[in-house]
Amino acid sequence: MRDLRWLFWLGVVFPLTFFMSMDRVNIAVTAPIIAQIHHFTLLQETVILTSFSIFYAAMQIPGGLFAERVGARKGLGAASAWWSLFTILTPFGGTYYGFVAIRSLLGVGQAVDWPASVYAINTWFKKEEQSQANSILLGGLYFGTVVGAIITGYISATIGWPWAFYIFGLLGFATSWLWWYYFRDHPRDSRLIPDDLKNQLEEQHSSNSKTQYKQWKTFLRSYQFWAIGVEYLFLIMIQAFYTTLLPTYLYTYRHVKIATVGELTSLPWLSLFIMVFIVGYLQRYTLRKTNSVYKSRVPYAVGGFVVAILFLYLAMQQINVYYAIGLMMVSMAGIGMVQVSIWSACQDLGREFTASVTGWVNMWGNSAGALGPLFTAFLVGLGHSFTSAVTIVGLSGIAGIVLWLFVNPQKPLIKETSTEAMGGAFSGRPNP
Image 1 (cartoon, helix red, strand yellow):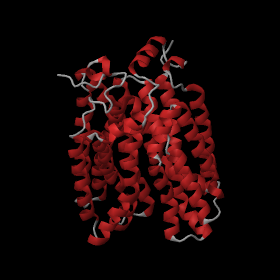
Image 2 (tube, one colour):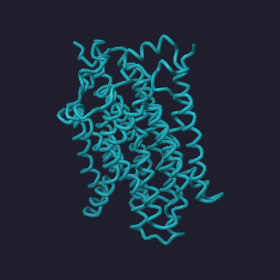
Image 3 (tube, one colour):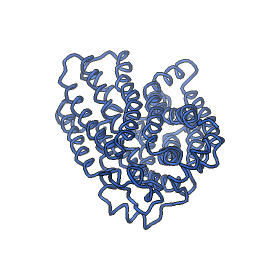
Image 4 (cartoon, one colour):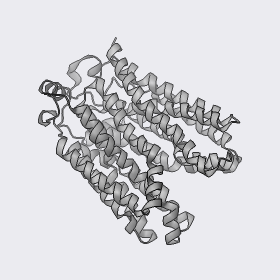
């Protein structure tokens, strides 16, 4: 029997995360049109845009618990169907409160997506394979960011802005069905996994454990649990500059023509998209050569933070805008190094409780995604310069580096997992 896991991950999971990303991008691109049609103020438009992020962040921990309770198949299947439905319903918002309600409910339902996805990787892939599987997951998400604005703009200009929501909502339903039809929580029940590999995966992971109150007491007493969560907040504080403020920076402070802004904005995201695949391979190679989970995660994360903040700062010093964008591409490549390390570390630390740990980490990150741009904009307003603001935000990177020094992925948060007896790097015990 052939091993079809990677084909499934590329053919179903990559598109699924791509459409998930598109469901977020299309509202940002069409927001000015919606605001003009319905006569929304700038404040009302901003609230509509941020209502998703607020509820998405708030529901991350419940989303992780839900995924562990019902399994990744039901969890991600329900989440993808939910977000597809509310994406289709978005054009029917009608009023300010209608749009806020729909986008808020979209955030509630989509909150299960990432914990369930990372949890599924922990079930279907061996330890040395997980970084590459995480790369595919991240790749779909970032590919949506690279091309999302272009596709949404084209659809809106040719057949009308509501169709950007209808089309991607329907495609989301289609990939949701494929996920439900082919994925199984237990490797032994899957038609896509060879029999000899099924036994290895079943031995590696227990799929019966569900997070209870006593596990959360253990989590909250662990410095690793806090470190892995808060460092993601600091990473997204840096990434949020590219997410929301880079177009404004290029247009207002670099005086780039509006037609060129979109092209230049997409280049750092393209760099991030490529880097997550490179790092996924490098981490798998490092783990195979060293048999050390620590060496295959932490050095990449620390190095990524250094690259992210150093090259962003250098970009701000450049007079030539194209040199600046080139340095920003290197900076975003550093962010990609950290991103792959984070979700692999969530699987290393969480094991059977990966969904809960992932929800915890993603809650911190999405909180920063909502608040980070506001913080940066406030600093720009004080100093009338992006350079001073980015210098202060760069301190987030230093904090992230320090926090990673407190993370040892070879020591799971709950030591009494079923994998504890396996020994070596794959049990979570430090190697000599």
